[in-house]
Image (tube, rainbow, N blue to C red; front, side):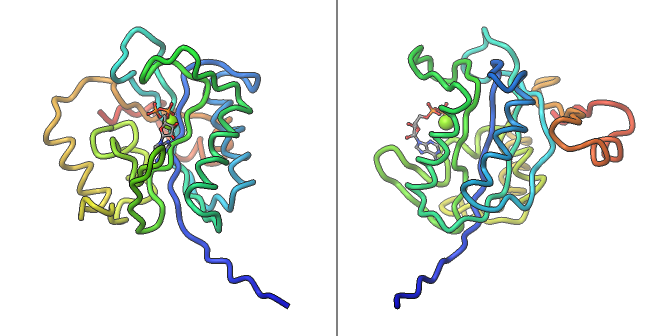
Length: 199
Ligand code: ADP
Ligand code: MG
């Protein structure tokens, strides 16, 4: 009989959305999608939920963003396909074709263990990771000391560098209290005075 050795790897998935889906408002979509991610592995941790200003294409609603940790035995390509099928489940429509445009759900493979992958349609670490506060701020919450392959820096160091290099735009990244995302117990302990402006 064949024995299969399943190697679990830790991936980080960036989640975002700014249009309602069948699940509800973007925060409800992200909460439902985070549960669906458990079909691809185990989700031991998630960041807080953030409200973020759109980047690149300004004439659209603010985004909701978060990052989750995913322990998976899938290979990166199979994982990306799994992420894309969950995007479709939540009504992701790429037909408008606007880069950085409005969407119900975006799932990006940010990091996959220590792997560096450059293939057509699959680049890991995610190429724009280091420039995006809406990714680095939530990623830093759950993976500050993780080294980003290729950058030879930790997530925390990349965030510090981005903060130093960027003029702060007030309200660009705001941690939001969300019971639908975190559950009542966590949400009420984490926030004393409502939302917390990070950027
Ligand atoms: P974006 O997330 O950049 O706004 P899309 O979600 O439409 O844009 O993704 C565009 C393409 O990026 C996808 O078809 C996918 O093949 C490719 N891609 C390459 N690397 C990754 C990655 N690490 N995570 C997610 N998509 C990726
Ligand atoms: Mg994407």
